[in-house]
Every structure is written in C-alpha cells, then in structure tokens.
Image (cartoon, rainbow over all chains, first blue to last red; front, top):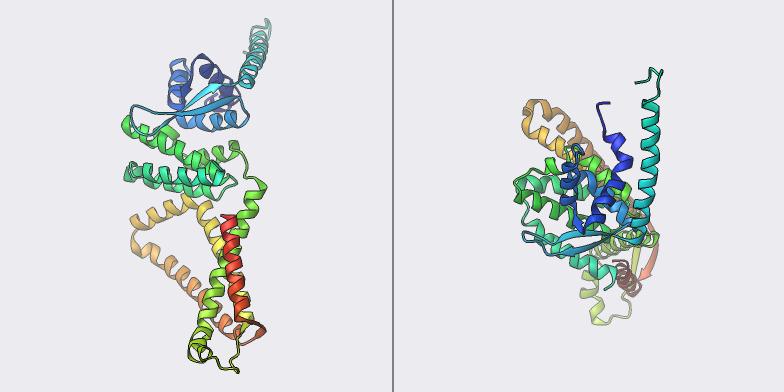
Length: 112
Length: 237
C-alpha cells in the first residue's frame, strides 16, 4: 500500500488524544511527537482539522497562552469526554490489532 | 462578552498579525481565508480559525519553514478538511447575514435612486419656499425594483463565486502573468466584450424600466424606509 493516509485517518484521532493525555500541548508539538513515534508525513496541517473536530466534539479543550515568539499559542488538554474516547479507542484498537495479527499469522493461508 | 464583540476584537488582532506574514505566505493565506469565508463556517469561528492559521504561519516563518511543508501542497483540500470538521453556521446567523445583505443593498440603492430622481434639487428649489403646490411624492419605478434585485443578486453571486474559486483564480492570474500575451489576449477580449455587453444591456433595460412608474410614495416615507433599513443592518451586523 503506497498511500498510508487512508489507513491512518481512523487511528490518528486516537493517537492525538494519547499525545494530549500525557501533557497539555499545542499543534506543532503534537505533530512532532507523532513523527518522533514513527508516524510518517504528519504535519501540523494534517492534524489541525482533526483538532478542530475533537474540540467541537468536546474531547479536548483549548486555551491560549503566551508564546516566547510571535502570537499566542493554542494549547489543548483532554476533557473527561476525551478520556472516555481515548479509552474506547484503545479497546477498539487492541481488538483490531488482534484480528489483523490473527489473520496474518494463520497457517496454511496464502494471504500473506 | 457577546459573540459579535468577540468577533470584532479577534478581527482587529488578526489584522495586526497579518502584518507579520511574508508576501509569499500572504498570497496563500488570503486565498484560504477567502475560500473559508464563503463556506458554512460561522463568522466567529472563521476568525478563530484565521487566528490559528496566522499563528501556524508565523511559527513556520520563525522556523524558516515553508507554509507548504506545514500544510501540504493542496491548500484547497486542507480548507475542505477544516470546513468538514468545523461546526456549522447557526441558522440565525445565516438568516441575519441574508437580511444584512438585502437591507444594506436596498437602503444604498434607495438613497442613490432618490438622489438621481432629482427630488433633492427640486425640493431645494421649490419645496423649501413652502409652496403649497409642491409635490412631495417620489416615484418608485420598475427600473429601481429590477436593478435592486439584479445588483443584489449579482453582487452576492460574484462574492460567492470568487470565494469558491479563490485557488483557481489565483492560479489563473499567475498563468496570465507568465503566459505570452498573444495566447491570453483573445480569451480576455471575448470575456471583456461579454461583460461589456451584459452591462450595456442592463443599463439600457434599467433606463427603459425607469419610465414605468409602479407607484408613488411620500418623500418622508422613503426617508423613513431608509432609516428603518439602516436599523435592520445594525441589528443584523
């Protein structure tokens, strides 16, 4: 699969929530942390619309804080709804991961 | 703080931030903001998103990174993602927007119509003297009604078209600058002639329709209507 963006689409929201759950953070830092964890081609622009959706759905809350350079920076923290969403994501992810693992490790199957 | 006040404050602070943006990034941001403005995003959220985009751009400039590397090359797709994920415009805001456009347009064109009808000059010459025979009635013509509808509709369509085509228009303008004039002139001449013909047709019809008086109203009623429309624009703003 050449383009992984479609695969990533569904999982990125959960991963953003995970990054925000560790500490209050801002868009650029989230994209850098995702990249540092091995997510390919994740820019601030990739995650910005997802942050908007998470904020709209009440999973994260934003506050503006002074930045050492330039304008105020938008920091995000997880809300209670966000914590629940993150837990639900992790449960679903483990199920999917187990299913994919199981499928690919089936003996006598030539699907690999 | 109410939403309207918050929106105005944000707009002012965003306009200040705009000055920190490089010329190259200004061109990209302008296209994005124009495109987003004609979408279903509320005006307050639009200013919040504009603030985020400005902050993103200024931070990228400070890191000496291009906006393309931050957002990706497809700015329209990025904006479409924003529109899809942002909250929709409240119904009341959409109604107020339409009311504002119509009231502002009718008020302006009504004032222009009154001025060009010759009533103010006639009033200064004859009416001020207190002549009992002075006719205070102002004719409302078919030309006024049709031109008001056409101008309002065309202006609204034009703003929306320019917004929706912001990225394509910028690309087109760039092509016009770089392509040899011999290749672009025929197309431009045809479009210019078509626009000229449409304008000429509109003016001829308006002049003809101006001869058809639908009804007459007292000048004070016209002034009262203009004032009422102004108050409506203040409420809808």
